[in-house]
Every structure is written in structure tokens, then in C-alpha cells.
Image (cartoon, rainbow, N blue to C red; front, side, top):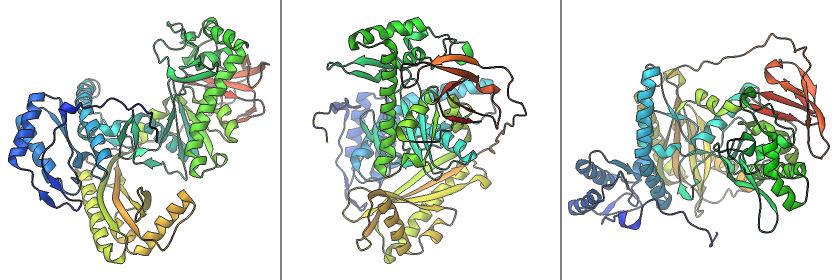
Length: 570
């Protein structure tokens, strides 16, 4: 609890927040009806404000949405072109603060995303009239454009989610089930932990300071990217990030007007990046500009420019290591049991440093690290996340009602499959329950499995259900109490499927290793003594080829640093 925290400015000012007189109980019973007079007064206020969008959120509307729907219909009758978001549609769960915040964010995004989708659709029709189009969600699956117009808040963290989905797919192909992903670009680094091939999903977090509650791939983000700026604080200590130069003007070595020292400049100074440039040499890097950018830091700290550059790398690596510890060590996972998969333009450049700091002995570099997020989009299924919030004690007497709730979710999923024209052979459903001990304030997600007979096969024995919760509770907190009562808060079902078959291309190289001697470059690792390193071009390396570091592997979209003694297996 930070009493000094600066809260973000509200998305909706106080004079644009309207109250109505109505009340529904926690059980969904109407005890104060929403009158026509109250509706007319609220609608008149909305009309006078002339907004682009409107968010409607009433207490316990997830149990009974009648009042929200009546007000929505009245607003649309008066303002047919306005975007309206109802909390019972956006996030049908209890906890009204998070529900209201999520609904407001959804309404805030609707006009912007709708305009973007319209332009995207019209442009796509000109170049590919028969193409299918989906937008990625924060939960890792795709959604149709219609759903994206209604629920744009689901795209809030869709970029990092696509990277994790792509990494999970690549890891599965090569047989790696336990993976820590490291997606490092120009402004930030995103890390996630995949265990037994399962991509982790969280159901609540802050986005730019606003609480949001919905399924999201569990990604930890830190301000550590190639454009992160190195600076000295008022205590005379070297810092890196979170401020970034961005793509424009970019690092000093880009010679596009940037003058601040960045992580990319540090890598160039240390020889980890080539003066020949990026993108196969089409994007030149200026060594002298990088040196000039670091001169002030060098003078202030009283050490050489290469020493400052090395310090910058160590700091940015420490920031990423701290993020990885958050998702691993702090949650009971040992990073040494995992394979590190770096991607993004800067991921492979820092992977060896990160792995060494965590004692990870395996690193998997994708064939095209710079487009793993795009890979994730291609292999992702269409996905719909459904939820029913119903507080239910886990007892033998409540098994029938629990089955009824799951059957309702399954029926909704089947309707979605039909609407989206999902191929029958690709349809898949899985269910999880948000469970807790009675009296606790927060829940644990308990996965129950997948299939089409979810209610019959899974909810046949309440003791089995309790045992599943005990296992998850012990895994998270190290203990469980088999005597205390357990309750379900939310029933969740995730439906997945494809509208077209997934085609996988497998590249098998028949080439022999190149007989051409690789170029040699001086690279600084952990000390100030440069090492002569062979510089390999990734496209010339063939399956089965092995060699030992130190070395540098360059390719169009990334550079990989191999430390002395490391073994490379293609």
C-alpha cells in the first residue's frame, strides 16, 4: 500500500458521472426498481453531454442485468450512433470497482478501435478481398472484428500476449515444455513463465494505473529495451530506463537526431553489434555517435566509455532478471529448471547475460526472433472467454446447480462456435473455477480439464473438486486445510477453434556448412579485454552444426552473443 502514490487522472471527470436510483441485491433480486423517470433523467444528461461513448455499471448487475439493459436501450434510442458498454457484457463478475474500471476503459476505447477496424477492413478488401481477419486478445487468442468492436478492452495487452503464444508454439515443436520467455524490443522487456506447455493466465492487473479484470496472459513488463536511456541520478548513480528514445529519434548510433546514450549504443561500443549495421546492413550504425553520447557519463563517473557501456548492460540485465524472479522464484519456481527463450530484436543480444545471472543452462533462440509475435498471431485460435459469477459452496447438495451453470456456459460456447463458423473438428473447450476457502478475499484458478462433457465428467464428485483446490492451494502457498469449507466464486469456460486449418511449414536444410571463414570482430564480455569472435551469418548455419563460443551470430532481425565456453547446437 503506497500512500504517496500519484494516481492517474480519471478517464471520466466527475461532472460526467451520472447516478440513478435503483438497487439489486447480491442474489439478483430487485429491491429498488429502475423507473422510467430515472431513465429519462439519465438519458437527458447523456444527450446534453454529447459524448462519444457511454459506460453503464450498476451494483450486482452480473447477477441481474435487467436495469443495465433497459438504460442501454434508452440511450441508444436517443443517440443511435453512440457506443455503449454495459458492465454485465464486458466483465460479468463481482468486485464493482474493477468491473466499473474495466467497463469505462472499454467504452473509452470503442470509438478509437472502431475507426481503426473500419480503415483496416476497407484497406484489406482492396488487396485481399477473401482474407480472414482476427485481432489478438490479451488472453492469447484471436477474436473476430465484431467482438473487437464490442470489447476492445480485451486487446489492452495483446502485443506481449502474441509473443508468449508464439514462443509456446515454437517450444512445443522442439519438445521444450518448461520455458521462460524474454521478449525484448526497443522500449521494454516482457517475461513470462510457461510450465508443462501451459501458458499462464491472470485475471486482474493494472493498465496504466487503472485496475482491469479479465483473462490476460500473465506477463511481467520492465522498462528495459534497446532504446532505454542511461542517466545519472542525483546521488551520482548510473541508471538505465524506464524512459526510452523510442524509434524516433532512436539511439544516438542511428544518426537520426538522437543524442542520449542508450542500451543499443552500449552494445555497439562493446562490439556486440556490428558497425556494418542492422537489418542485413541496410540500417547503418555510427560508432562515433555512440561514443559521443557516452562521453558525459564517462566524465561524470570517472571511468572509461567501455566501462560505462558494460555497466549499462549489467543494469539492464539486472532489471530483466528481477522481472524473471518475480514470475519464477517468488511463485515457487526454480529458473534453473527452465529453458530461456529470448526473442524480439534485442532478446538474443542479452540472453546469455540473463541466463548466467539466473544459472539457466539452456537457451533456445527461435529461427526468426524478431517476428515471434507475428508467429503467435498465425498459430493462435479464435477464442472466447466466458464467465458466470455465482458464489457456490462446494458441497454434495450443490453439485446439480454447479452442473447447470457449466451447462449454461457450454451452451453459450456452442452458440459462439456457430456464429463464428468454427470448424467442428477444431472446437475445444476447457473450464476453470475461481475457488477459495470461505472467508478468504482472493481466489485461485483451478483448472478442471477440457472436452465436451465438462459438467458430467468433472463435477461428479464434490470431494474430487475440493481435492483439486487443495492441490492448487498447496502449490501456491505451501499448505492446505482439508477441513475448512471451500467455495466457488466464478465459473469460467474458454472456447477455442479455427475458421481455417492451420498449415505448418517445416524447413529441412540439405546444405552443408559453409566453407567460407567467418568474419572476426572484437567483442567485450565481462571485462575490459576484447575477445576475437567469429561472426556467423545465421542463414549459413545448418542443422546438426555445433561450435563453441565466443562467437556472434547475426541475422536479419537479431544478433545473438555467445559467451566463451558456451556450446551452440543448430
